[in-house]
Image (cartoon, rainbow, N blue to C red; front, side, top):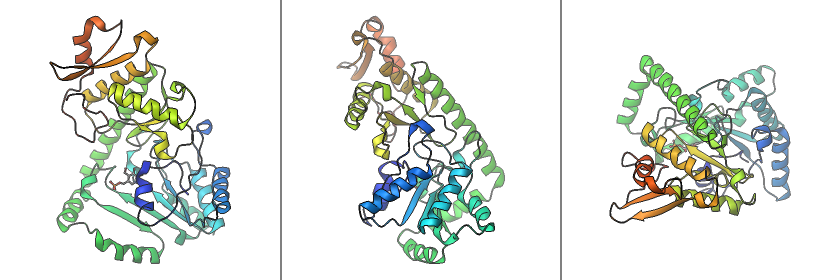
Amino acid sequence: MDSISSNCRFDRDLRWRTGVQLIPVVCKSSNGFKITKAALEEAYEKAQEANINVKGILITNPSNPLGTILDRETLQSIVSFINKKKIHLICDEIYAATVFSQPKFISIAEIIEEEEEEGNCNRDLIHIVYSLSKDMGFPGFRVGILYSYNDEVVNCARKMSSFGLVSTQTQHLIATMLSDDEFVEGFMAESSKRLAKRYNFIRNELSKVKIECLESNAGLFCWMDLRKMLKNPTLEEEMVLWRGIVNGVKLNVSPGSSFHCSEPGWFRVCFANMDDETMEVALKRMQMFVGKPKEEEMVVVERNKRSKSIILRRLGSFSSSRRTMEEAIMPPCILSPQSPLVSART
Ligand SMILES: Cc1ncc(COP(=O)(O)O)c(C=O)c1O
């Protein structure tokens, strides 16, 4: 069972080779997508009814795609749930150091210490996974960490790891870097300062066109609420809107359905992998897309054969200032193919 989850990556990483099934724990916007005991019980029962043997719960804390952290009570209730059901808990804490404002991040390791003192917790059931990909921005190094209290799991992982060993050069480089406390502290402080600035900027700019994001304090993204832009609250309409954004303004924001979100109309906006100028361009495009007040003012996309660029403008309001508009919306640099801002230049 997994709570709103890290897009199709959990599907890919956990299901493709193992045949494991993932059952979403349905979380709702009405309480900020909290993982409640009732939601856990419901997902568990649903699995049992379908004759699925539940082996564990997978959570991401801080959450991808929500950018929120799990509070102490929620973590305690999850620990008590898995102990009651005698199932495992895998905590993906890959975004642990992306927290940029209060409340602070609480690792499941802290909860275990407290619960164990009271004799409420079987440590063997709990496993933490981590990597340097997000906090340090090192996805290319392929360094992952499994921290389990269960010797059998650790032994098995040790054997499995021979298929994906981290090179000695990488180990040396990472060890040298992480032992430099001054560097790590400075890096973390600057990173959280920049993430906070981006997050506030995006929320502020989107609010100008009456688009809200879920209040969050971690992660490299925000969770944007476009429910009111759907004709009907269906997954089909969510895909129609997603296609409209991709084709209309060349922005690829991930639809909630790719994270198993049960409420159509939510989108994840990644904001940490581009420079300031590109971010501004992306937001201008988004504002144009959602800010269309009347049908005749709809954003149109046309191809300018001579400049080989795509021109976006609002009919009426922008028709006479095409050049300015083009300058305003064009990405200032060639973007990486991974960038959510699909390059408009052809
Ligand atoms: C929650 C979560 N876990 C794990 C990963 C995988 O990270 P990597 O394989 O780059 O270390 C990601 C990447 O998007 C993620 O969002």
